[in-house]
Image 1 (tube, rainbow, N blue to C red):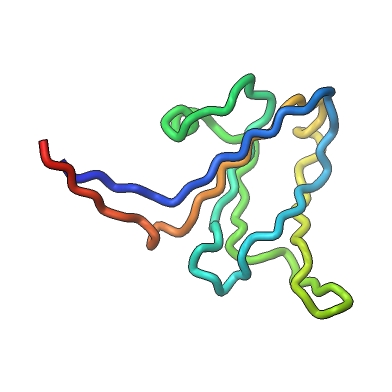
Image 2 (cartoon, rainbow, N blue to C red):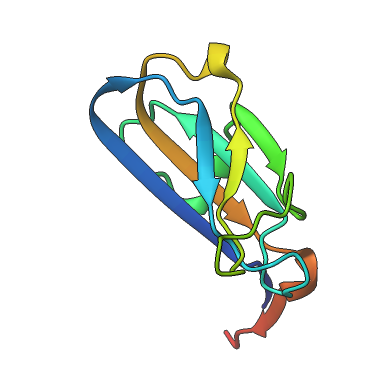
Length: 116
């Protein structure tokens, strides 16, 4: 049996009270780095951290292409600064939890073979 694996990461962040999310601040690898995620899928108000299979059947609230930053900012000492990704404010009101699903380029896919 051959199985295709992709590089993904799920972060589930519950909050103790509801909030309005205006922006997301990230510090991913630079755009030229092969491990930089290309897509960020945002889900809100999930009661638990979903698995990859569960997320496949769900529609994200936002699907953002993060392959390249909205702008390249530098700190005073020349280091790359965090990236600010604006969110759709009208959709991000009354948020009790946020789930971020990062998807890396398909070129990172691995092929595994299992013997049965």
